[in-house]
Image 1 (cartoon, rainbow, N blue to C red):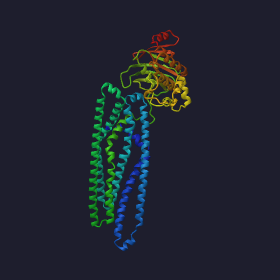
Image 2: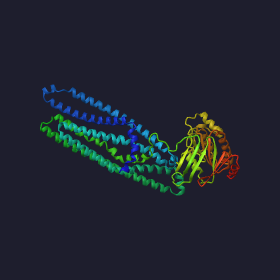
Image 3: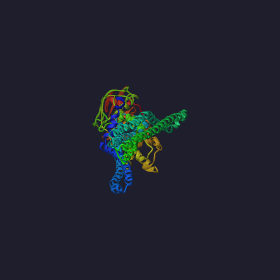
Length: 561
């Protein structure tokens, strides 16, 4: 049991302690609203009954005070309306503020190393965490905690009110309400938990499988798997429908149980107050007040029904988010920032693997220095750059360095305008800076020739641009990024020699004052460097500087254009 609830603490702490004053105030206002409603109905019943009895005789009719109870009824009605409005305002404001903090903490947790790789591997799952799972936390407070507190207060108030008529009746009534109303809610919660979890997981799987079907339908048709994917969707949809059916059955059964409990409560109180009236322990108007309070006392427990049905979904969301929510003020463990780049006994592996492919590498790159990591494919060059970009964490050792920008052979462009694709590097950049970056990348004239200019819409993955244009657009984005460290990973591998040399010349012209760390097996890229680091099997085997025989020999050993 301890292992089940241990991961709840971080999320619950963020949810309940973000704005505790407002959360408590919202719960109190919700309880006051219900209590005011019960008091309003009870006082109205007492007033109507007392007025009817007083009207039977002229003397009592003249002496009966109608103004005090009328004022009380009006005050309770206005107070109930005001508290209801204030409760909705305060509870929702507090909840949305708490959820906003949790989203920030969740992003902070995702900013740790390997976050980008996890996002690429599981985009649908992480999006579900950010939307559906956090939405489930909203229900935890609004549909479970607040209604439970309100029901408790209502039971205690009803017990106290009936206790003034007869102490034993008040105690038994409060205990019955807590046992029956609370028992039904707890039983519903336990029986609905599995179905709610199945429903939540099926919804996530359905979204993910639908996206796979739509986005990959061409590949599925080519592989002859389109029917199989549809069968998968049908199976998930069937599981989701079955979970919905079970939850609807449980909700209907719980509604019937609350109705039966309410009927038993009303009948028992009616018999009890009738006996008290018969023994002249209370008056008929007071008996009417007691009956009407009993009539409304079960209703707050019925308000727990929705929260009890969703409790499994809430629990699943908390368990899934808990390990990924970073406490406020936390940061990645390797965020030491220096002007120099330092690898100290770094061992690293591919994302998601524990098998090291880089072994105990120690390397220092001075600020403003240009260094190329050379060696065959699989030697560990890109892995070291991924550590420097903080895309992955080192298995052992430590890395410190300044803010970096990674420029690879893959061009990540989005289905958006040219302007917004550029502004990924600097959201505050004005059009003047965008045109300057395009000019430096050699793409200004081609964008100007487009019908929409900077507003030209690109297709998915940059559709509408040639390979060279896409590379230059990515280069312009690099120029906009204010980072002192540029990481170039096979930056011109997929380009023809003419475009590649032009891109490298533009890089050389713009990198003045910046530190360059290049991973390559191409001579044209390594020629940018003043120092070559040879890597074999994840270890540094040579370190030579420009102007030495070893440097020229290492450069000539690389693949030419």
